[in-house]
Amino acid sequence: MRKYLKFFNKRVIVNSAKEAEQFINGLTDMNEPDGRPLVVNDNTRRQLDAIFRDENGGRKLQTTGCSSGCCIYCYPAWGETLDECEQKAIEWVNRERTERELEVIREHQERSREINERRKELSALPRGRYEVTIGFTLMDARGGAFRHRDYTYTGIAENGEDAFRQVLSALREKYGDCLVAFDSIVDADIALVSVM
Image 1 (cartoon, rainbow, N blue to C red):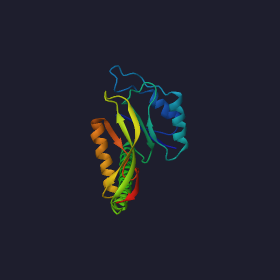
Image 2 (image 1 turned 120 degrees about the vertical axis):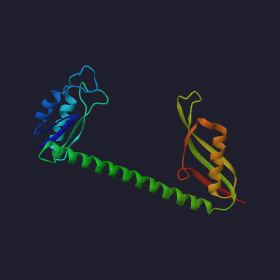
Image 3 (image 1 turned 30 degrees about the vertical axis):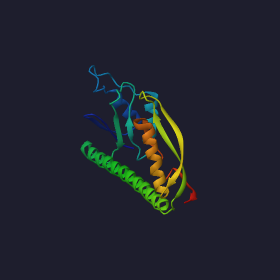
Image 4 (image 1 turned 45 degrees about the vertical axis):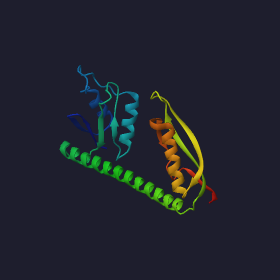
């Protein structure tokens, strides 16, 4: 099973994990001034074995001697030549990136739908006394530790959405810049206690 390995400007097509290991062991870290040699460690050896057991297997590898910005890229050899493999690897990376971006967009759209549905539901509620419990996160005034708390607010509001806005306003007024996150309108517990 053939794989295409790339490390900066060095590229090779290999037929086995052993050949891949020999290629990697012949490399030096391009990010290091002294060109520290790379050495396949036990973890990387296991990863290479797994990659060669899977026809479509590939991944980014780091091994002993690799600096943090130094990776060996391993893809299935989708071409006969190094240039063909390079082109196919670029196409695959772009397709994967596009699929991940589309998934993030779909997640955001779904969350937006949930929020809009909850807003409609809450804005249809009558004027009354509401109890709202919301989780929020504070940053320590010195910029250090984070603490999660719950805040319960009881007050008169025009509808459920207005009650949520009042809670956010109260939290922002009380905690200012220390308030770093809070539950969305979907996650907050908003209950109509009595109609006015």
